[in-house]
Amino acid sequence: MAVYFDAWSKFARFTGRSSRSEYWWFVFINACIYVVLGLLTVNQERKTPGDGANAIQGLFSLLVIIPTVAVSVRRLHDIDRSGWWALLMIFGCFGGIVLFFF
Image: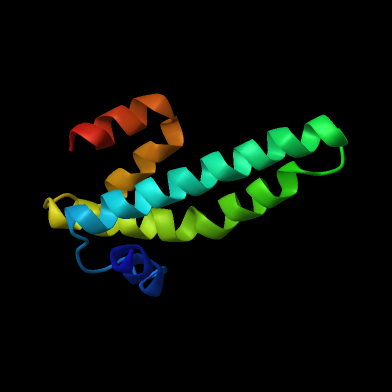
């Protein structure tokens, strides 16, 4: 858990390196948070549909977009790749597969 907060402490730093554990713990904990928020959204929409239950999930997505790109760029630096490779995330599944194999 300390590794997750370490990634947050460097949330807008695109220089340097990020260890494999820092990157994967950051991705794993964010994925768990997305799952929990998704389950809360589904549960909330059963009670009162259309009341903006997705707003919390959307706000969390906006909150983590810069730290996710920053930790990805630092991880790419750690494997001796340019941070510009992180732009492959724009292409969705294809870019994610390429970055996964890096």
